[in-house]
Image (cartoon, rainbow, N blue to C red; front, side, top):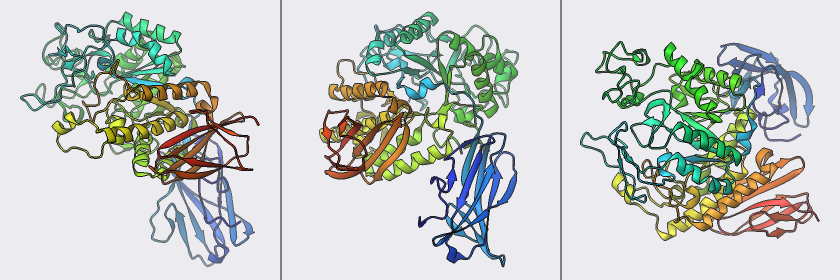
Length: 626
């Protein structure tokens, strides 16, 4: 053997099985130092993140292999979920030696260890990862009439013109209150279900729909009530039922770390007739909040006074949100929802998330629990605590922000290897079911519109300039070409492809609120919309895209190629992000290749497929008989 590595955990010769392992699983490790190094002994040092345990296991020496010496051992993963860190120690008969970690050989006493995720095998609903999701900001998707905001919580006002830009200027106090509404409704979403079905959508992720003083509704006023501008509980039940008839499920946004200051529970402005925590220490909700002293100062999310933080450990809050017979979690799943997305999961204690998962598994075993996490969720540290999101007892999976950031960067900068390395890190660290059901996306309500991110040459410095910025014809053409490639990768990659409403129509905009414009009904980019519909149909009809194993074929500069294989059927996605024609040779042991996007056919030459990829072009190749 002559591989140029001593240990590579992604190589089956060095570690099996690949990646994360279930509790109690056997893991085989193999190191292969050069014989010229003179090492006669090797051991692995394992440290448990949560248990604090540390142990050293000496390897068996299995004799020379060419110019290398092979050492191997089988270790047993812990019986409880754990995050293991490991490195190796090599030494000679005289005791001299060194350690080996991710940085290579070293003898400075420091270590940069490899990670081994050990998870508890628990059921994960399969419908989410296989399908296509669509995120809706309810106020901006579809309306039937201009609503009257009188009598509703908050000082709301409504745009008469659906195509107005969202308000963004600060008020006299220097705050952006988000009190401008457009009047999108649940009935509006219901009317567009056929449109969503044509996109291949199988799950709707709705930003918060509960009563709230702001248009984004992340400052909940009443968890038990649909915001009246959106409709009623009956409207919600009807939406879920009609969507279900089309094979579309509904996922709700749960904002459980904080409420609104203008809420039933806090009631700072006295809108509600009952006592809120800001009105009296005798309020039934007083224990939900931390005052110091009451009522002038209190804990708030990131110090924003309109978002008072909740004490999740309050028994009455736990009962109200999670454990009560008619808790918020139970109530809305009974009403027709199929899952929850937990806003700012970093701000929720592990035990709180575990309680939600426990209730869902017991009473709604087919419901999906998703978390908002912006980084690698397997190693996330929040408030100095390593989180346990994906170890089997909390989240089923997470929003895949690393997918978005690495893919968009790789397309703009022609660095496909960045996307591959970022995704391989997650594939190695996440339990398989979490990786294959991650929510992948190109944009959300918290990021600039993907078309703007891929097309804009500059980022205007002032907010006013960003508010008025529109892509030039050249920027838009380049952005659209890149977006088609990004969408191809999105729909072909493992995980749930998720479309932020209007991205498929060609909407533009920088950060919040410019990314939250109204859907341009009647003004869609029809070519782009047709592209998304085609990708949605392929995702729905092709099992390899839903469940297939991932294999990387190329990731260098502007060229990216990977395949998905399921039960002997293989599809291969190929992307050229360059503005020049590029040549690519792929291993190919089948018949002629057909591009499912255009119908083009390519003849292989023996065991390879030679492709000439025009500028900013992508293929989705299938083997055809012949």
